[in-house]
Structure formats: C-alpha cells, structure tokens
Length: 354
Image (cartoon, rainbow, N blue to C red; front, side, top):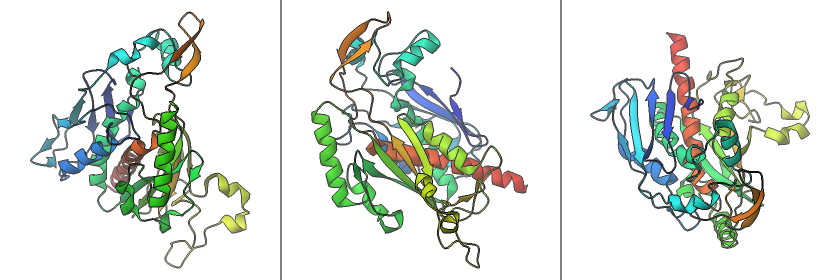
C-alpha cells in the first residue's frame, strides 16, 4: 500500500490500524533546536480522542503518545522523530457481522477489490483512527511555526449553520462546548441535534472552518505546488471529507470581477480578503481561511441493504461504537493538516533563501 507519507521537507509517514497494536508515525525533516512542549502535544491528542463527550464514539482510549527518537531534553535533535499511540480498547467482535459484507459508502468494498483482502476490524487502515498520528505531527508543526496561529471550528452541522464571519467570533469559546462551535447558542442547538440523530441510530455531516493568521508573504510554490492546492490535498486526505473551498469559494462565482477584486492599501495589505490570503498560489500576508465539508459517517446503527463478497443482496445493521457526527473530533485534525502544510512551506521558503 502506497500513499502513507505527506510533505516534502517536513514529512510525516504513518503506520497502524484501528484495531492493531498501535498507530504511529515518523516525522522526517523537523529542524534541530525546536523546543517542544510535550503537554501541548498530548492536549491536541486529547481533543481528538474518542469518549470525550456524549456526542462522539464511546470507545475509551487514553491516546497517550510515546516518543522513541528525535527529541532530547525537550528539544528536537534534527533526527527522525518516531512515536506511537497504543490501542487499548479494541472490540473487534463488534465487526464480525460485516466480515463478508460491505457497508455502503465505506472503504470496505474498494479495499477488498483493490487488495484482495481487507481488515474489517474497525476499517483497519481506512479508519479515522489513523488520524491520531497526524495530530501528533501537526502539534509539533504548530510549535515549529511560532507566531502563526491556526484555529479551526465547527461552523455547520446538517442544516444548522453559523452565519457569522470568523472576524466576529471569539475563538476562546471553541473548547468550551463539546461541538467546538465558537457561538454558544448555536453550539447548544448543534449538540441537541447530534444527540437526536444518535438516538435514531443515524449520522449527520457538517462543515469545519479554519483560519490561519500571522502568515508571512511568500509561502507557496507555483505552478503545481500552489499553497491552496496543497491545503486542499491535505484536507481531502482526511476521512469523510467531501469538499474544500478557500476565500470566497463557490459564492465568488456570483460576483463580478470588479466587486470580487481585493483592492490594495498603500502597505500592500488589501481592503477585502476574498482571495483568502492566497494569490497566484502564494500567501499574501492576509489571513488564510477555508471550509472543509464532512459527509455523514457511513456506519449507521440501522438496518441497511448491501451486498456480500459473492455479490448477493443481504441486510445487516451497524454495531459497536461510532461517531454520530464526525466534525467535533475532526477540528484538531483539520488544524493538524493545516499545520503540516504551513510547516512544510515555511521550511521550503527558508531553503530558497540559503
């Protein structure tokens, strides 16, 4: 299986399965001399881990990261950073009923067709649990980035949509509710809605918005490594993601160019920021902002029609512990992938100046 690495200079390779012994990764290219706060790294994992509230999967995992190399006395050494997160609460028997059948809209069928074999226990490598390794690497990338700030939050669940621009929001509210929505009133509505969906044995999708601030001018490598193209690739690599838009996004098609253009101030900043902080694939110093759309989780706790390995129609039902809505736990994953992209381009920019 190829495709387990991400990045050019700041490069992450991940390993492990949802119900295997452990998940983990190797970070190659992290510069020496970066002081790391290990508690902050663990806190990022705590934001992603299962069992943290009533609206997420109740799998109980401590998700404690163990580092094996690349860090000495709280500082990076410049050598590969190896780490693992050990699984402790697998319940593989919950998946025995789908050993020979496929969940609709899940990776089950295509994995079996591509490899002639699949790990049906929790989806194996296709499970969103794989993203724990990304969060560790992203937490390290965040500390490499220094003053650059990355904040993601839930802006939509189903038809419940936050109608405020990010400049109107208080990011300190994000971690004060289980949905991770920076508007308390909307957060309560979203939480109640997710709970009602869970009671039905169903799932619902949502949108995570992300803002990157204090970005220097010049990050991004045309033609094929445009900053927004790599950010899009990073986000679309996350499980259940169906869409990515930055800046004015799809709404921009309704505007005339004269209205859409970002007029300049004398200092090079712009009066508006419909470009989303990126022009020509290169950061222009303004805030970068984008939206990431997540589909409803494929595993529903209802009876559903599907096929088995012989192509026969069968009826089965989801079992086990699953998220009724993935977006609350995906917030730190979006931040992590954004941090990996920005760290990689930051190192590329430094190398171009040598």
